[in-house]
Image 1 (cartoon, each protein chain N blue to C red):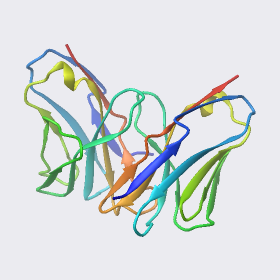
Image 2: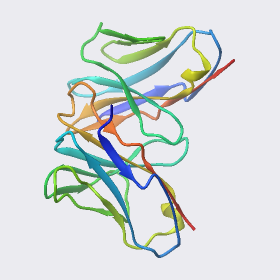
Image 3: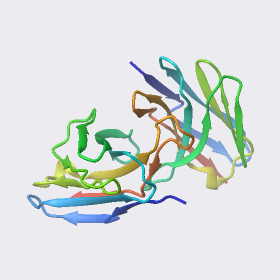
Length: 114
Length: 108
């Protein structure tokens, strides 16, 4: 059973609004990741963290920001949402990258900016 | 640079028609190969981890195998509920490198 939770599950919001997508895990994993995925398309890494107070940008340029103040919590924030931000956002966590099971993924947040 | 390539991009099968999905990888020092299943609108769900050439893992109608250059996900007598996107990934540095996935559709 996955122990990583994303809220909200779905979000429709107007252009220019500030939003925060929540991601929490109860497994004590140090490593956490945010991916962006359009329907039927590849996963694109946008942010990652190796532990508290550690955050890095991923391969895909993103206007979002992240923070990692607590091990279990890795929120993603968009200061001013735009229609181009419409996508699915997936959060994942892992212990050691090569450990059995690899990443554990959340169920995702489907964001629509109108 | 680590690379993972999956083929085919999409595969349509009739129920009961067995087939295989391919995952080719280029990585310096393999530290595992992971297979995931992803249903539309959901996060990927872990299926298998393989660590060494010759290793095989099975789960219901799925069997994953590994060589030094590629992995196969064999699907035996698939059912419509096996329809999903199947992703493979390898560790590179401190994160997984994912392939583009194979979208499998099984028709009754």
